[in-house]
Image 1 (cartoon, rainbow, N blue to C red):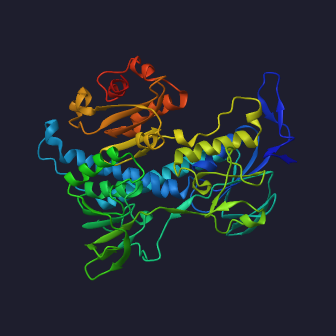
Image 2 (image 1 turned 180 degrees about the vertical axis):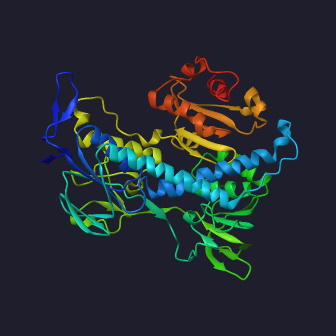
Image 3 (image 1 turned 90 degrees about the vertical axis):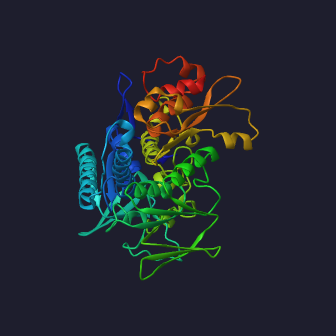
Length: 475
């Protein structure tokens, strides 16, 4: 019935070449985040009988409880930060203050609306949504444990997309009040007066920016010698400079080993004997895959550290079981998870056989960090190219040359483009500055499509815009 993940009796053909389902494929998805949602809608569109099992929120806990509220809070903090320096825009006596109750209501409205939209879309396509915990009990059998009892499902294709959760070290016990995980902080019960952030990766630096914008004192524990240890050192240095300018304290070369309650708040201790006292501490030291209790051993899946091993089609070691999103151990980005879901639907429904099918290239995924200034990158990094001994051309232009940056009264940052010196093909790039998360899309398209720097130079861009600096950097 199943061969290499493709049901044999599934696909038929109309005269015009449109693929339609002949024998309905029973596709069961465990997890309703970006990967599960996208897979469900695309598979249903092509005739699959789709059932989704979700135990928390349709839309995904990591997405709706981490990504969306954090970016909404950052947007509020960004508005406060902008207004606080509005003298440069010709304004005076602007003194914003955060209303914690209003902020909490804002986050609730956004979450409720997005979850409602996602549920409505799935239900409109005939997708059966089961609220409960899903687990595999046999090669083609899934059980959904619900409040009203167990429901057994037969499946031709199984998709596992259960996401992840914040990692909690054994030297710390979060209480959700003073010692926080990321999910306790959207927003916290009370606004910290001094927040100690543990972890200087993407999530950690976003929280530093967020709470500093709200007016808190912030100390960041940096286990290495730069924030964002996986990023371009020049990019990390630009963020560090801005943090220091804003009064953020950086505790470098220190790994946290304890976080304990005190009479005044929290004390964080490090492996070099230093200690930091604050009103609150926030853990931002990564995540763990939600792979427990899924019954993975019942079908013999290959697993590495809790992550399911997948191939270029997101197919596991079992020929009809796929994995996507954080559970797959690939890039933990909502955009990547959604694209994995799309590719799974195409492969499971056999569409890759009769139409162009591009495999996912994770090295070409764009990513962004919503600090101030924003940071975004895509493709080959300058440091990685040098480490590989690869010949590249690197061009960099600061936003100080941009008329739009002057209009915005914010000329921080730069655009850096990495290209092939022989062909001019754009291999990657980094952007630090206002709206970097939006601007990186231009370079992402260039990297994915194999465009050259000349293609960027000869594009007729709008003036005045920040995007013009992309063409300048491509010269």
